[in-house]
Image 1 (cartoon, rainbow, N blue to C red):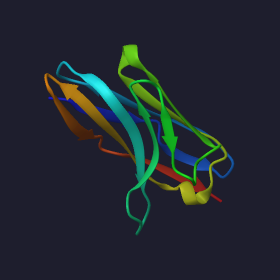
Image 2 (cartoon, one colour):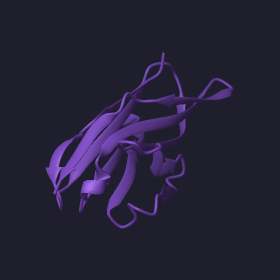
Image 3 (spheres, rainbow, N blue to C red):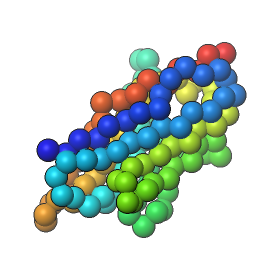
Image 4 (cartoon, rainbow, N blue to C red):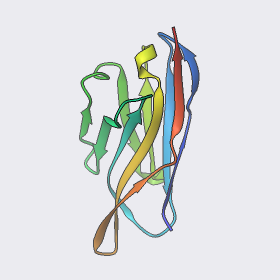
Length: 119
């Protein structure tokens, strides 16, 4: 059973920084891509950033220049460095992974980690 476990959320003042981590564990798999999504109060879940197996990245417009996604293949872990945080970044941040197991690709979500940015 594959699991994605996030960590690193918390409360920070505007202008501060946080680093999120997401580790995949469980069955034998390879990571096709991973990404961060967030859902604020009364808002649909939105893309924050993604990174694929080659290291190519993609960012949502609202976080470009402030957030950096990266990964450590040896640890099956993805990171998101979040700088210059704004109150509008407050949300539950979810890790999503597209993992290849045997001959199929499967999507998994983490349980989410709360990020709160105070003004």
